[in-house]
Structures are given as structure tokens and as C-alpha cells.
Image 1: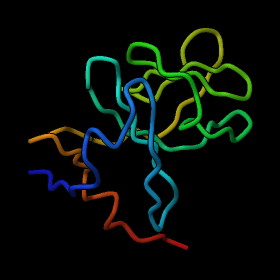
Image 2 (image 1 turned 60 degrees about the horizontal axis):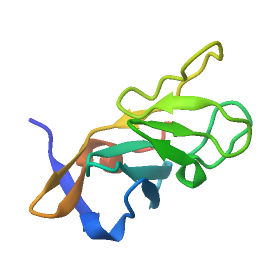
Image 3 (image 1 turned 90 degrees about the horizontal axis):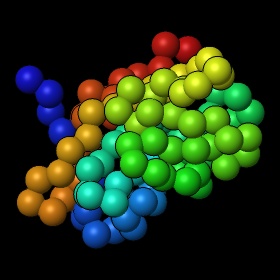
Length: 111
């Protein structure tokens, strides 16, 4: 069973926008779609390191603000001819709150 951590009110994230959660292992972008779905992705495009949290949310995808790579927010996979992916994390809403998979927050760096 997955444990989740309450990280924000859903209303704290604009529709078709994002907020960033800083963790010991890096930043996670929490996205909210127009229909109030939430997704969590690593906040760094593998192409040029662009902040995905500043990208354009459309449907269940986000476009990197630097070079236009499009990522499926459910899987983290880049769409189209470009190859690449970012880590995705389990996120959900409950009672107007956004919850993030606690397993990532508890991981320690191997270095």
C-alpha cells in the first residue's frame, strides 16, 4: 500500500498550471489540468534542463518552455519523434488536498 503526504490545497495550483515541491532528491512539479486531475513529474526536462513547471499544460501533457518537448504527464514519456522521459510520481486529490507518494520523499541518495 502506498503512503501519501499532503502537500497543498488543490486551489493552490492554478488550472493548467503547476507548483514546485522541493525534496532532498530534487524538485517535483505538481500539475493541475483544466478538469482538476493532478500529476507529478520531475521538474527538469532531460533535453536541456528546462523547468517543466513553467511549461504549457494542455490536456494531460506539458510542453517544455525551452525547446518544445511534449511530455505525457501520466507516464513522463516524451511524445513524438523526440526520445526521452522524466520520472513520474503518484499523486492524487482527496478532500480538496493534493497528495504525493511518500516513498519518493523518504528515499535517500546512494551517493
